[in-house]
Length: 117
Length: 107
Image 1 (cartoon, rainbow over the protein chains, first blue to last red):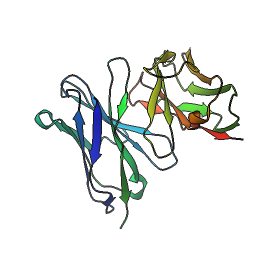
Image 2: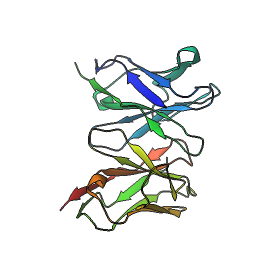
Image 3: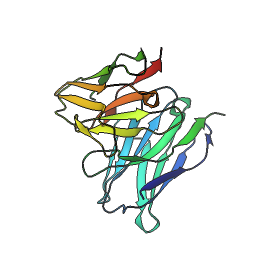
Image 4: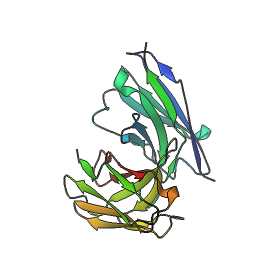
């Protein structure tokens, strides 16, 4: 069945770089796009960016200067790197699959990231 | 960016109630709106896509409607398991944007 699982450090120092990995199973990264979505505690989600099925990328303009999304199709993994982290980057980070009929039909369990010294 | 404004922010409801919540887009998004349900401690789950289409396995007490800028999610015969925060999302424009949510709580 379709599964997505995020992994990465739970604590990041201010001004440092966040690196997260999304490992997927049950579908191919060359057939479906994968997005990263984050959610501060108690707030609505925010779409960060997308790795398209064809290898192209799209980013939220608010984060574009700090964000990079890449993939390794042989390992079924999508990667997020975001630099210059600040305390307001604290929250839960999810990877999601774009369905063929809409977006975000499957979500990972999320990884909580705290930016603090 | 397209702002999605949800109302009300929270609702106190009873089991069996009919619940209606709203989402207003700051510009025309056609029917490119989804609704998601998020229970405490869980990831969001897709309920409605394309403004009015129930996703696989979603009970028929959930109904989405609307187009353009105004959208509604209705839960008929509210169940205790429906207590959650509900978010609308537009995917007509980049960036895709979510509303701030409507939280359903028991009276």
